[in-house]
Length: 302
Image (cartoon, one colour):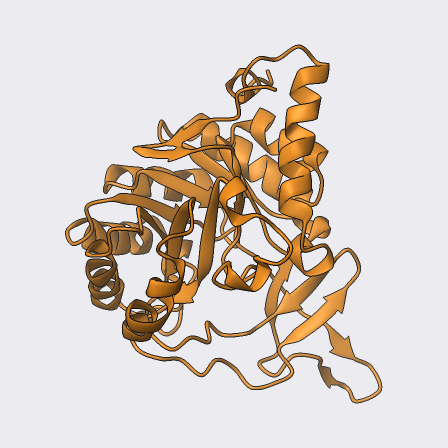
């Protein structure tokens, strides 16, 4: 068996396969299907400072080779997570990582500070695709200054591994990644969903309650691979790749493009055991090609 160990800053992963936030619940929901301790990490659903109801229904639409969603970060807030969820997941033998969202740098920082105190949470993933209420709803992650402001605020209050999840709805994602690196991010993950829309031609309206939503699934994979490669060339910190991964071959593409680890999202809805299958498939490919370690293929393309 090949060595699948990788490192994201100071965070050690027993293999490069993680789950994407919002697609795997808190991990507990998949425990009957996947031995959770065999995954490199689990990124739990988005958590905010205060509870959020999310958007009105309908907020999911199936598309060709993917899906649109506008769930709206529905969650019960960080205090509920600490009091009720954390005790249930703290003993799972893998990296339990919390995705953090907010509407101001201060709300990000306060949420991160509370999570910093939890011994069994070794890292957070900061979602900067959230709307900045001070800038008319423009996402923090669409500008270098917006991204840097959030990362700087979180870094001042959070002392463990910080991953920053980047939005693909930009013209130069590499520059935004560098801005995050400059302010203390330990890693960047990409891509988040692409903005899309689907129309009900009989009712003559959007199929989603708020008109647009985030597109995920196999349809976005070529865009994601290209962006991962662009960012891997631009930063020195580890890159985590996601976007349409559903097979080991997909994951290997991301690794070769420059990702140190990968996340699987939408595919979990189709096959709850896909993460384990991808992990095993990566190992089989490495054995078949005479590779002793997964690190041999990371960022190996010309």
